[in-house]
Image 1: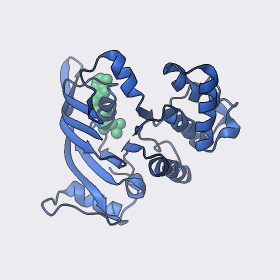
Image 2: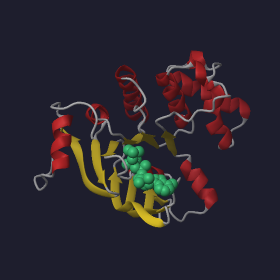
Image 3: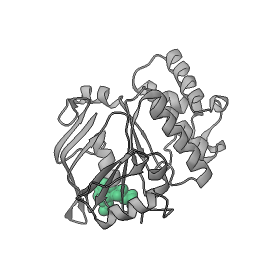
Amino acid sequence: MLTLSHVSKTFRQQGSLYRAVDDVSLQVEQGAIHGIIGESGAGKSTLLRLINLLEVPDQGAVVLDGNELTGMPDKQLRLERQKIGMIFQHFNLVHNATVLKNVAIALELAGWPKRERLNRAHECLQFVGLADKAGQYPSRLSGGQRQRVAIARALANSPKLLLCDEPTSSLDPGTTADILGVLKHIQASLGVTIVIVTHQMDVVKTICTHVSVMEDGRMIDSFSREDGDFRPPAAHTGSYRERILAQAEGEGEGTYV
Ligand SMILES: Nc1ncnc2c1ncn2[C@@H]1O[C@H](COP(=O)(O)OP(=O)(O)OP(=O)(O)O)[C@@H](O)[C@H]1O
């Protein structure tokens, strides 16, 4: 459902050019929970932002459900972007708006009439189990509750694809498990495809159906879960894969790096 073909992104850093994402091609299957892992600075977040064109690639193509987003006129791109929700490590909520308003903002931007957007926002809060917090401000909520609000906001426009940038990295293990449960429920019950950037092996182990590994801007490996385990193609024996497999199968815990 999502294809990246030879996508690159270069930033200017202190006067010189730095290629944060280097010729990455990636296929994300419909209904997958696709993890992107790698060490700090590998280019994971940049890659995620290239998917919805928050960062514009220098070269390469991003194709969502057969529609090429790269090079699309702005107006059409704004509509296509409504098919893509996004959540972040630090939730990115509007602090002086209520929980309900935070969710409704996404619909306001999409041009929904007021009554309908409030109804839809309520529905989304119900989905994440926070209907009773609609009138609260984010500062009164726990981290896990704030991430649920962010998830409700990301779901408001009924996206086909949900991008998650380190969604549980600021949360304790119990809350992480709750949020991963919500993401799994979104995939299973709404059929939303999920791409999740993480450095937490527990995230990979718990919910990912596919994993891709980035190193120095390049995609060095991709594999999928089969029969409950991550099985490497016979041809590959790289150390990254071995570490991931070992951790995914329970021999290790904690972070990737
Ligand atoms: N807007 C920008 N301008 C300049 N350099 C940038 C910009 N965004 C990212 N970079 C650089 O690109 C590289 C990749 O960053 P990115 O955040 O994608 O890595 P990451 O794998 O997500 O790392 P982390 O796990 O630490 O978040 C880093 O060297 C970063 O400093």
